[in-house]
Image 1 (cartoon, helix red, strand yellow):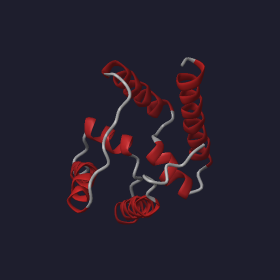
Image 2 (spheres, rainbow, N blue to C red; image 1 turned 90 degrees about the vertical axis):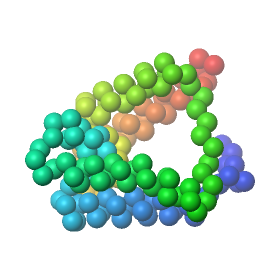
Image 3 (tube, rainbow, N blue to C red; image 1 turned 120 degrees about the horizontal axis):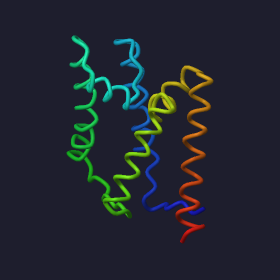
Length: 143
């Protein structure tokens, strides 16, 4: 494995991680909610009165954060090595996986592991293992 030291950004990665931790902690401490993106978005599909505002604000923050970052530093170039069909299939598989796993990587990997949830540990290990296997098969076995 080679680390691209020219584009390696440990300080911005650390800052981003701290902001994610603060946002997840703040949502839990101030609102009693877990910062699982699929659950937050899914809650808008079946809205409950008084529950819509914080969900929209959280999702707006997800969109606004990179735009605000772009005001202070150049955004990295977006490079996607997949076609539209592959992206649609990947999105559907991720969506199905979040339903079967009762949550997504943000809910299980960030918040669940922080709460020492055994179910989140199993889910996160499963997500990561599936990702490792998928990349290996697509990049090495089928290439």
